[in-house]
Length: 543
Image 1 (cartoon, rainbow, N blue to C red):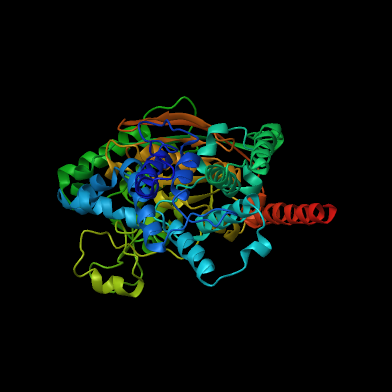
Image 2 (cartoon, one colour):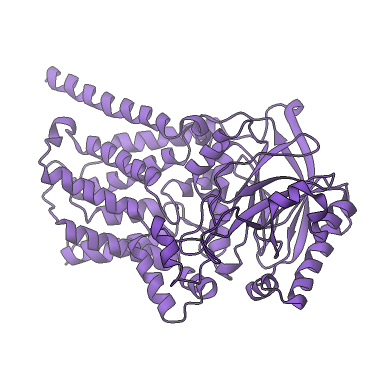
C-alpha cells in the first residue's frame, strides 16, 4: 500500500494542491461561511513537501521541485478562493473567454509571493551551509523559527490579496482580546506553528507539546479578556447615519459616467430617492459608496466656490439637514496625458453649511484595475493597455470633522485590507478618528464570494485598531463593523436600499498593535526561542 505522505509525486504535487483548496476554505467562499482549521491543515500539506531539515529527517528536495509544489498549492488556493478573478477580468477589463480563465490561473504565480520568498531564503540557508543546528537544536526549536519567519514574510511582503493564516481566527470573536495588542500576526504565528508541528509529527513521529501548550495559552487568554465595544458611557459619541446602497449595475454606471443622459438621470434619481426618504430620527450623516457621483469634479475650484457643488449633493444636504460623504472622481492638479493619471478616486465631504470642507484621494490603487505595478513604465504601457482606470495616487491622509465634532477618516475599497497601511494612516493624522469609513464598489465581482471576503477581512481592522468601520457599498455588503468583531444590521448584496443606524463611537486611543505593529510579536518569539534554548542547555548540563 502506498503511504500518501511519503510517495514522492503525491506528497510533492497532489497534497499541496489539496492543501491550497483547504487553505481557501478558511475564508468565505459560498456566502459567508468558512472552515476555521482549513488553512492550518492546508499549509501543513504544502510544508510537508519542503525539506525543512528536522533532526534525523532524511527528506531532501530541490528548489525547483519545491517551487512547483508551491505552484500546486497556489493553484488550488486560487481556483477555490479567487474563482471570481476571471469574472472580474471579463467585467472590468473586457478580457474575453477563455483568456480570462487562463489569466485567472496565471494569478496563481503571484497570489502568495511570501511563500516564494520563504523557499528562496530557506534554500540559501542550506546552500551557504549555515550551522543552524547550533541555534536550532530540536524540531520544536525549528518550528518556532520557521513559523516566525513565515509570519514576518506574510506581514511585510507586498501582496495582491492579503488573506493571511491568522484571519480565520475571527471565528472566535468577540473572544479575541489579544488582537488589539498583537494583531492578526499573533494568530498567523500560532497557525503556522501548529502546521509545522503536524509536519514534524509526520516526519519524526514526535509531538510538539510546546506548540499545543502555546495554542492553548493563546485561546485561554483571548477568552479571558473578550473584546468590548466601550468601557465608559461618558466617553461615547452617537451619530444617526444613513448608508445608501443603490445597487447600480456596471453597464448603467459606465453609461452614466460616459455622459448618457438617460443613464445619468436614473443614477441621480436613485441617490436622491434613497437619500431623502423619511427617517425615524434626524440624520447626522449620509454615506454614499465609492465613485457614486458619475461626473468628474474639481475639488480645488469647489472649495473656493460653494455654488460649484453639484445640485444632487447640495439638495441632499439641504433637504435632510445631514452632512454627506460620497465617493467620486476628482481632477488631478497635473497629469502626463489625456488618459494617464488625470483623476483621483476620491471621498468628498459636504458639510452642513453646504461647503466642501475636505477630500481624501485614494492612495493604494488596485493593480491591473486602477493602475499597473510597474512604476515609471506605467505611463508608457498605458498607451497599449487601455482597459485600466489609471488613477493618480493620493499623497495625504485625511481627517474629517462633523458639525458635532466627531472625527473620522476614510479608506476607499481595497485599502481597508492592509493593516500596515491603516496603521500608518491612523498614526499619520493629527488626532485619532472616532470611526473609519470604507467606501466600496464590489459590483465588478458579480454574484460571487468576493463581497463577503472583502467584508470578512475588513473586520480585522475594526478588531486590531478598536474602531468602528462604516462600510457603504454600491452593491453590498453595507453595514457597520464593530470593534468586537461583530456587525450591525446589513444590506445584503444586490439589494437596493438604505440603512439607518445609530453609530456609537467611543473616544479612543491607538491600540498597541497600531503603535508598535509586529514588534510585540518579536518579544513573544524571543521569549519562546531563548527560553527553550536555556532549558535545553540546563537539561544537557544536568545529564
